[in-house]
Amino acid sequence: MKLQNHIAYRFLNDEKLLWEIMELVHPDIFKTVKGEELPKGATATWQLIHPEGNKSYYITESVTEKLDLLKVKRKEGRYDYTIFKSLTPQKCTFILPDNRLVRMVVAEGKENPVILFDYIRFVFEDKKAGTGVMNNCLFFVDRVTGEQCEHFGHPDVVEIEDYLYKLLCFIYLSEIEEVVLKPGQKMGTRRSGKVINELKQDITVINSKWNITSIRTEGFNVSGHFRLLEPNGTTRLQTTVTWVNPFQKNGYVRKALKEIIEV
Image (cartoon, rainbow, N blue to C red; front, side, top):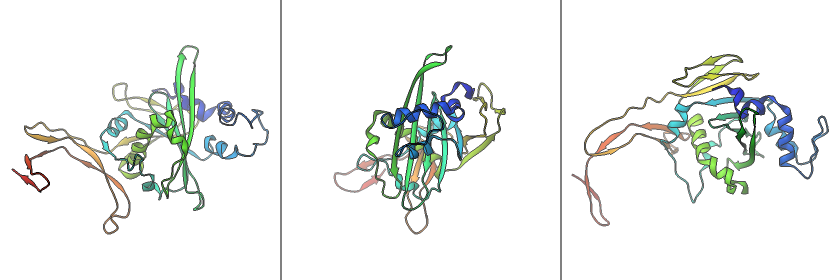
């Protein structure tokens, strides 16, 4: 894929787009005059979307396919973001398929233990003219308490959260392979998925180290999947992701309100 055709190209290279986002997010207090001092309340947004200190990740199709195999559960309707409480302060951009991206900032300091996100989705109306509609949604979560902002109920956040949460688990809690592409470099083939870095900065291509196999047997099979291993305070210090290979289960008879008997 040519990154020049992705919204990430403008987001990471065109400051005019950033000013347009600022005007969209703060329409009542912001004037898009280059060089003007940022009004009160807009500074945090500017720090989130500005590329300074950013590291860009390109998420391959191989990773996207594996995210569907990651088994995660909500607690009382919410994902548990406290498993990311040990993340170090950072700013990164996840370049996703289908002209989407997520900018993430892990804030510094114990007094501000939040993870901020900006989800951007672009839909072409005229590819030749390069015109279309861009949706932009900002939201945040406290990584210590798990408290979420009210924007988690926004349709755009509802659309991306399942994918994003699994992606964060995959990148930060499992074994991944990182390949750094300098500006102008490329990797892969058309068949496997070609990536051409046309940005002005490095991008890190994420692949998976998981070797997934499949089996065909008769009986009661359980398909391969990823599983979150929660810390138990004795043998593990933090949550990790592990791959569970497909396996065959024996049949069983479940007695009402009693034990399960293997047969």
